[in-house]
Each structure stands twice: as C-alpha cells, then as structure tokens.
Amino acid sequence: MPKNEPVIFGRQFDCETCEFKDRPIIVVGTKQFATDLLANYIRSNKPAMTSVVSHLGDIPEPGGLPREEWRLIFIDCHGLDGTAVTKMLQAEGAPYLEHDIIALFNLIPGDADLSTYIDLGVRGFFFESDHPDVILKGICALKYGEMWVARGVLMEYISHKPKQTTNQDEEDVHLTPREKDILVQLASGATNEAVSYTHLTLPTKRIV
Image (cartoon, rainbow, N blue to C red; front, side, top):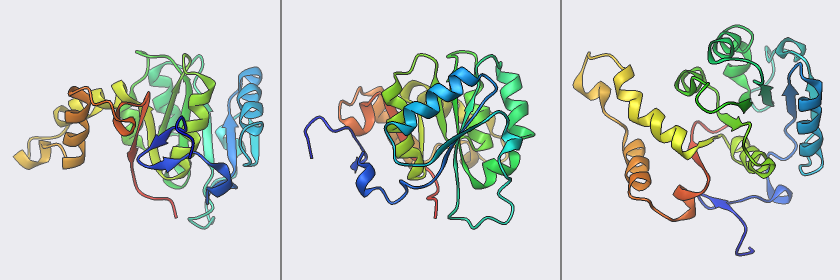
C-alpha cells in the first residue's frame, strides 16, 4: 500500500476490493447544477451507479427492499436553514433514514443542527468548504456503515451529549468508553491518522 494512501481505522480506500462498490448512490436536490456536478464527480471516480433526483419522494421508498439493498443518498442542503433541514428529515426522510445511508452536503458551518441530524440517523456531513476529495473518502467510510463527520463537529456533539439526556439515572449521562477515548485522543492532539485525519469516522451499526 502506498505510503500516502489515506487510512481510517486500517481501511484502505480501494474500490477494486470494496465489497460495497456496486451499491447505488443517489444525489437529491432542486439545484440541478450542484447535484449534477456532484453526481458527475462521483461517477468519474467511483464505480457505483450514480443518479440524480429533485426530491426524496422521487426515490422509491425502501418498503419491501431486503436489508442488504440499501442506497447511499446525498441530500443537497444549499439554501436550507437548520430548522428546514430537520423538518425535511423528519417528514420526507423518515422512511429512508431507517433503511438507507443518508448524507447531507453543502452544509454551512454554524448554521446546522448537527446533534439533531445525528440523533435522527444521518451518517454523513459535508460542508460547502470541503474539498471534493473529502466526499470520495466519505463515500468509502459511509458504505462500510461508519459515520463521516468533521472532527471538531463530532467532538462538540459528544461533549454536549450528556446535557441532552434526562436525569433519571447518573449512569444515563455518562459517555461511553468509545466516546471518552475519542475525546481523550482529540484533546491530547493525537497525531495518528485514525484520529487526527481531517475527518473522523465513528463506527455505527454495520450494514448487512
């Protein structure tokens, strides 16, 4: 493996060996230029079938689809404030969040309720300022059932998570060992790629 090949938790970004390389990617948004631009960029760099639709409702609901037939869905958030994105996810996005992998792109830093989106089940977050290569690396992580989110955003989410829980039990407000480990490594300025790479993947449930 080349020395400069980026690795997240030991995973190599190699489409030829990826067991999920054929899972479809769908780009959703009413701004045709932005959605076509992203779709064409993905098509030119990834082997997966990539398509574009204007609205989530244009994608067949998962309904009777087998669990292993999930889609990776990118939703364009350009022009939407945090409240509008939340409402969209709670309404149109509900059936897809249960079955598919949902990622938001064209987010504006500071104008997005990331904690709510994470709690709703969104797994990928891409901002207007992100380099295009970030999306390609994010696709690899997302297809393996991991979360792709800016390191600083994830740290803020974990830091505030206890404050959002109830006071039913002291143990309810404790961070998990994994969350504590991430915070310790981030706070100590760890330099290994698994932690200090521009974006951090946090394993979630595996897609099967």
